[in-house]
Length: 245
Image 1 (cartoon, rainbow, N blue to C red):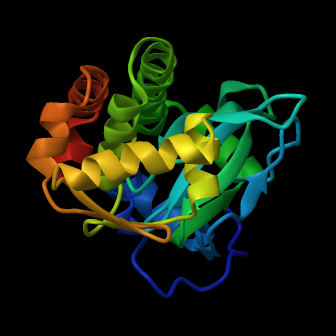
Image 2 (cartoon, rainbow, N blue to C red):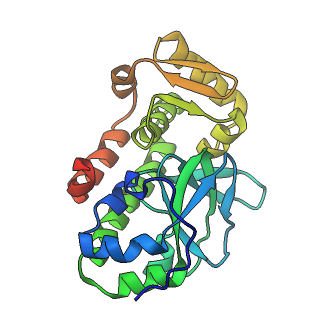
């Protein structure tokens, strides 16, 4: 049995679709252990190589995994929002990650202590299968991001990134700095500004001082590369209960 030592829950953890997909018995066991947390913009949840103390389940925040080079340059590997969790290396046996984990868009979420997560994974059954399917979907996103960054234009990458972020948010506005966007995409801030202004000129977004409002989502989907559809299809295929949640 889990020990009840978490902070009281004041919001709904089932706004996280992975938590919402838990069978009732598992949900009742997890609920006392989930700790509500605020996730402010730019907060670093893990540094590269650090031992993970918790896994995080965002509800209204978006979290990015970044790889940071020795010269300080970085690029986003994967983005996680209300569809999933951050910290798969914990239950996959690695205990740590080479990525820096940063809050990309401010919001709330829940966290679960490391040992509790490992205990749940080791129980097997529906939790193990759900987490493995989620991990496969995450790997698909990582792989497609690598392909996209190598072969597609910055304009297409920005469209893909905006669409993936929108899928993980309630609403159509993203709040973040130019610097954060450039760190995610691994490009100079001037490049981000130019690509965003092109999308604005096309009537797809409104962009001003770190606020991006999406005005025409179908237009973004037409303008992006194939990578967004590949990732979305795989999430929908592997996690049908989440899609319906």
